[in-house]
Amino acid sequence: MGINSASLPTSPPPSASDTEPVVAFDDVSIGFDRKPVLENISFQVHPGEMRVLLGPAGVGKSVLLKLVNGLLRPDSGRIFVFGKEISAMQEQDLFELRGAIGTVFQEGALFDSLTVRDNVGYRLLEEHLPDDEITARAEEALRFVSLDGTLDKFPSELSGGMRRRVAIARAIVTNPKLILYDSPTGGLDPITSTTIIELVMKQRDVSHTSSLVVTHRLQDAFVLAMHHFNRATNQMDALPTGQTDPNTSFLMLHQGHLVFDGTTAELVHSTDPFIHGYIS
Amino acid sequence: MALDTIDAAAKRGVLAVQEYAVLSARALSDLFRRPFYREDIFMQADIIGVGSLPIVILTGFFLGASLALQSAATLTQFGAAEFTGQLVSFSMIKEIGPVVTALMVSGRNASGMASELGSMIVTEQIDAMRSLGTDPLKKLVMPRIVSTVVMLFFLVILSDAVGICGGGYVSIFMLGQDASQYFHTAYQSLQYPDILQGLVKPIFFGFIIATIGCFYGMKTRGGTQGVGRSTTQAVVWSSILIIACDFMISRVMIGIFGR
Image (cartoon, rainbow over all chains, first blue to last red; front, side):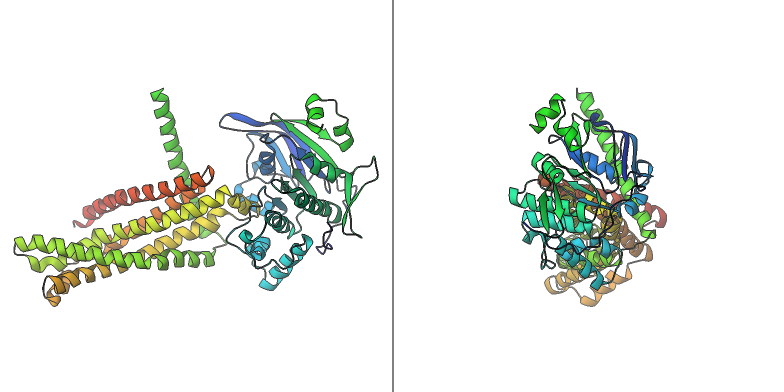
């Protein structure tokens, strides 16, 4: 299950002074067709932190993720990303900000008429970088997700797991400061899911990128909390019994409300009937 | 209950018009903002313009031929068969050439645009594009509008020419008319306002085809079934608007030039 050696540039772990939240939700609500979907949501994501967003299917997890990169606008409340209030920004200004955010969509959302190289290097193509540089950086990102030699393939020629890995390569190719994962393992078999989770963990532990991971699979969430990526062996290792990753914490949505915001230990020992029922 | 249904339908209609106006205005304003996506414009021009050549040439030729056949039969009754060329060129340049070419291009390209953009919507590719920092209106809609307007303009000129030739073929080889007389009357009777009318129409029609195709594509909801629905609506509405717009332009031009 080992992942190829990380060759992407890595950023140092965040310093203690670097504590301004990367994402901050302040009393955010949104609804569709007069039906509330998310109500009074407030939470923060700090530099280098991974927040795992749990909740049953259809509770609004993907909607919350789309609010973070401004694909949707809240009906009320304020959303800050990198200190800027994106809920008050024009769509035109958001395009620039999104350059610092990597997004992995539920089904990958690869451009089906572009090759893997052009998908991964899409942002670089838009910036009109030289072709050689685009190819080199796309190869580098694909090596990170163990997909060397797929540059000239089209998404339709790849398996579901490979497509998801290309989506991760596309999200990390510009070394974003924040990555949003929307159910990165949804619809995949257990072995492929573990590979994807290992990549998410690798990005957390090697590049120390802040991230928000949406999932309804508890197993994935706990693997992220109870393992760390070993750069020497290039695979994930279980943390000693009783230890959890300090940079990983949880959020849980239920019926449009944020019913939990805390650490792994707090989640496991929660006495809330819904949370208890959900995790057991 | 019936009033509620009418009320809801009216609101949906007004909202759709508003969204269409906003999309068109934003796409037009994108013409003057960087980046210009020159390569996408050329690629779309190739797909829309060059790709439509066969259907435009074939329909243009047979329309001109049919027109000559029908009009010659009627004109002969009044002893005016020699005006066949004039009638064909008048009809092709002012009315039939622009309208039929636009309808052909609409059937081929408005549907193509709606289905392509609709598929991108339902597979989240448009959201992915936005999250990668690209404005889909600028990258996908603006190049299609520019390409359709420019290419339809030339396609209509080609269709007019081929249609007059088609009429000439029937008049000369099937009806035994004099070639010189046919082309002479076809050319001599045309005046500047007639040409202008024939050239103004494709600019509006091209805009309608591209904006309607992109509008229905971008507002696609509901998976593959939604894509099919958007495609149908794009063709239906662009065809209706082309014919309605044709009437309005004709009225305005006749009002201004008197012919």
